[in-house]
Length: 264
Image 1 (cartoon, rainbow, N blue to C red):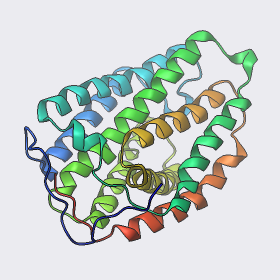
Image 2 (image 1 turned 180 degrees about the vertical axis):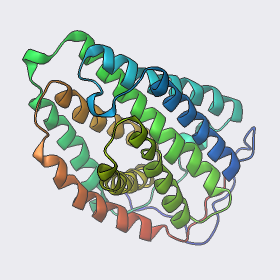
Image 3 (image 1 turned 30 degrees about the vertical axis):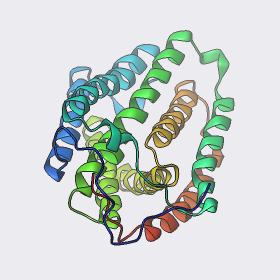
Image 4 (image 1 turned 90 degrees about the vertical axis):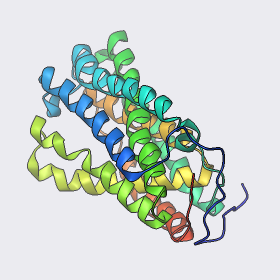
C-alpha cells in the first residue's frame, strides 16, 4: 500500500454536499442516542456485568439485543443525515506500511482466541447470539466514535484533536459499566486499554481509508474475547501482546496526520 497523505494543515477539498452539514453537536447527539438505547436496554434486562453471556439467554438479552437496537438507531440516524460516505470512507489513506502490524496482529490474535473455546460448554444459541453481539459491538461502537463523531469533529478540528476527542469518547462509553456490576477498581484499567485500542482503530481507519476494517476487527476481537469466556475458557495470553503493537501503530499514524484538516 502506498504511503498517501494530504499536506498537513491544508483542508481537503470538499466533495459532494451532504444532506445535513456535519457538526460536533450532531456527532454528540448521535453518540448520546446510541448510549441511551444501549444502557436503557441493560437497565430493563437487569444486566450483571460480571456474568454477561454465561448463558445463551444472557448473550441474547445483555449482549446482542442492546447493541443491535443501537445499530438500528444508527442506520436510521445516518440515513437521515446523509452521512454514510464520510462515516464509512476517507478520501485518502495515510500512514507507513509497517504501521499495519497493529491491525494485522489484532486480527490474527482474535482468530487464535477461538481455539480456546471449550466445546463441551458450547451451544448453537450461544454461538448465534455471541456472533450477533460481536457484529453489534463492532458496528455500533465504531460508527458512533470513529464514524459520526469523527465526521462531526472534522467540521471544526484538525486530525490530532479529532483522534484525541473521539478516542476519549470511546473510552468514556465504558464508564457506565460500573453501574451494572463492574468493580470500581477495574474501571481505570478498562479505560486505559480501551483508549489504546481505540487509538489503533482510528489509525486503522486512516491506514485503510475506510471504517469498514475497524468495524470488522472490533467485532471479531470482541467476539473472540466474549465467546471463549462464555464457555469457561481462560483468556488468550497473546491478547496482551497486542497493546504495545497498537501503541506503536497508533503513534506513527497520529503524528503523521496531527495538523491535517479534512472538511466534508
